Amino acid sequence: MERLTPKDIFNKDFPRERKGYSRQAVDEFLDLVIQNYEEVLEENERLKEELERAKAQAVNREVIDDILHRLERLERMA
Image 1 (cartoon, rainbow, N blue to C red):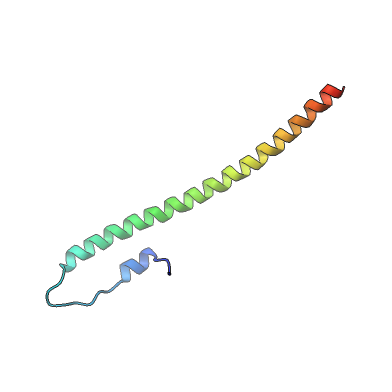
Image 2 (cartoon, helix red, strand yellow):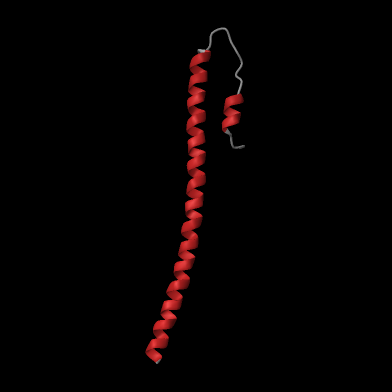
């Protein structure tokens, strides 16, 4: 299934029928959906960036821990 974008939601046209939903109510709801969807996409991008930073910090921490461990071994040997 193709992922929708806020623009897809905005540009969606529904067939008009004699007895249907209020066009204004549908438009207002779709505006709310678009706004919420954009917020979710932005939050998702922010969380991806935070995850990448956390991964980099974890790798750096592993390297630092390894160096400290080696230094401790060297100190015990000396």
